[in-house]
Image 1 (cartoon, rainbow, N blue to C red):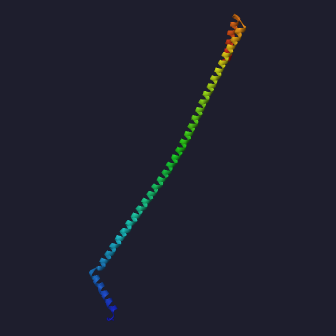
Image 2: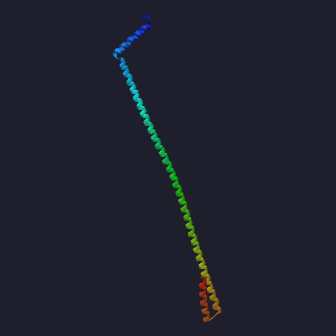
Image 3: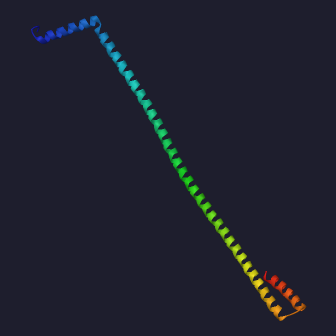
Amino acid sequence: MFTEPETWVAIAFVILMVVFAYLGIHRTVLKALDNRSERIKAELDDARRLKEEAAKLLAEYKAKRTTAEREAEEIVASAKADAERIATEAKAKMEDFVARRTKTAENKIALAEAQALADVRAAAADAAVTAASTVLSQSVKGSVADDLLAKGIAEVRSKLN
């Protein structure tokens, strides 16, 4: 039994373990393992905390992005509505301007027509008075002619004007 190498390896292992136990190496190893375990646990806690903070920041930025997109859409919609309203108002103002200008032009035309008609009537009355005066002065003589002429001219002027 003592001639086999496995036996000597087992005896050397047992002696080594007794020496380690006497020197307290098992406590040092356990303490090192506990320290490593605590450090890994602290790193995992930090990683978990950082992950939660990152998730929170991501949610905040997503909310801000959504809010900004919604505000941008509202601004675009408002701008479109304003543009449509301004275009409608401009069209209405242009139509009103054209209608007023047309009415003014029609009034001026009607006034010019009335003035032209009055001028034609006045010219016709003057021509009729001149013609009547010429005819009456050649055919009728004396004070009767003058009275008839004055009365006829006054009557023609009152009827034509």
